[in-house]
Image (cartoon, rainbow, N blue to C red; front, side, top):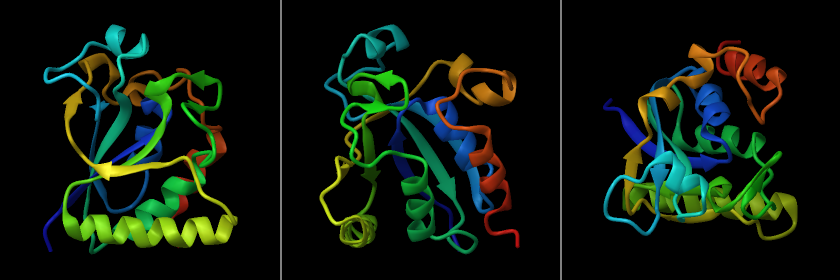
Length: 170
């Protein structure tokens, strides 16, 4: 089976990337800036000042080991689905939550998953769901940030990373 990609925005991309890196079946991650208004790669400085791009993780995964549905369920556990332009202590449009699909098949899967989530939660979420319009990889120092800086800032508690390591390995 061939690998697939999906782009997920879940607040600060450092922690979101690290969480997904630990899941069995995830082959590669790239942090970057997605679905903003520019037709060129923005800088971190532009994004952090409200340019309009979301801090996003492009995830390459093996659907034979972890399905898109499973990835989405894991994603829902690390975000506040009702928060607008904020996750944890991070505030701004760049920290919005978003699922940015690449294909029509993914769109169908995402829409069904979101319907199940909202039924479970009993109300509509603030998660942006749309086709990936653009994705620009972030500067190199942002890539694998928490691997390079294990004591670096993260909006996710360390226990979440232990859960990710254990997921799918029982």
